[in-house]
Amino acid sequence: MDRIRLIGGNELNGEIPISGAKNAALPLMIASLLSDEPLVLQNVPRLADVKQLERILENHGVDIAVHGRRRGEEGEGQRMTFHAADIVDTTAPYDLVSKMRASFWVIGPLLARCHEARVSLPGGCAIGTRPVDLFLFGLKELGAEIDIDEGYVVAKAPKGGLVGAHIKFPKVSVGATHTILMAATLARGTTVIDNAAQEPEITNVAECLVAMGAKITGIGTRTLTIEGVERLHGATVDVIPDRIETGTFAMAAAMTGGNVLLKGARAEHLQAALDILARTGTALSVEPEGLRVHRNGNGIQPVDVETDPFPGFPTDLQAQFMALMTMASGTSQIRETIFENRYMHVAELARFGADISVDGQLATVRGKAQLKGAQVMATDLRASVSLVIAGLAARGETIVNRIYHLDRGFERLEDKLGRCGAEIERIAG
Ligand code: UD1
Image (cartoon, rainbow, N blue to C red):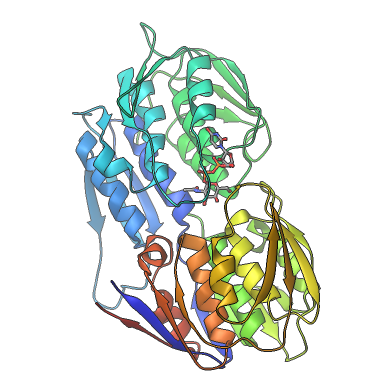
């Protein structure tokens, strides 16, 4: 299994291009199931999760083509066509779905277009139980009949297809919002989704669906209204830049010191995190080409944080922020409100000498001036990268084991950091 070796202590200086957002690319790819015409996506990141979803879509009968990959362009996002002319199989099998939770979301489009779907219950990062009750609630509201059979969700639409409904989610869920939004585009009549997720990735998908002919209003708000149409057509859509990658590199620069331009980053997609970073003493400025992050060597101020659905502070940046707080000049408190078991990185950060105690959803971080390099183990996607940024700031050598989680969500991480002065390498094996 590959490992990452790094020697900490160098400042980060230079430019880092921000890749297309994984969490937008995945549902956009799934949206291709809704139409028999091609959906062209631009700026798709080269990630293991994208590859895995390609396998799942191919199993349903989607033809996938990657265009214009030329020598020297490896660093640029892919332009890909997804053509679901004919859905040949409405089952998403366990061995494909169990590797990635988002693949469960195919249930929405399959049910809307083919009126039936059989999808394995999902896997993904081990960050809590992550049930699917909200998905099933929403699909039932649209008239679907749902059974659970040998680990599979078996869903059937009523005769004539799904029917529009007023759906009020009791809890905000990104995945359930994507799924019901996609399903409702082809339902008969009007669907209203109350308490919808407002993440920028939802907006990216909603705008893609509109470009495909869907009728959606309220995009970017808590209430989405979808008037079902008979069919959707092809479109060409850009994947938005990855706000979690942006925030991760911003926190890395805040921790190591230096001056980095995050090219293509969109500050409005992570304003809450940037406001918090500014309070830690990090200088941030929006420039025509992206976001500049600068630390001039002054100490890192402790700041308390609570994770929340967008526009709040993202749970996907909680581990990275905790890494930063381990070097703050005082004590900070972090409250995780989205997932019940998302502190696996705490034990690993302790190997660097960090002083963190956890009581339920609340973590108390007592900052110290210097971390020391260590052997650590990546546990989930975002936790893994918090160990990398801690290693960048720690004194001496760090080895991060089990980095396959990183490859699921971060494109060319070592390369991007290495070009800015980090001493970092991948050790194969
Ligand atoms: C998405 C993101 C993930 C991010 C998360 C929260 C993708 C591919 N993944 O995951 O990176 O951390 O949003 O911003 O976009 N829940 C239920 N029942 C359900 C569904 C969810 O109780 O049926 C709960 C979850 O257990 C969790 C909370 O709702 O506690 C939020 O989860 P959700 O927004 O659904 O996360 P994902 O869509 O899986």
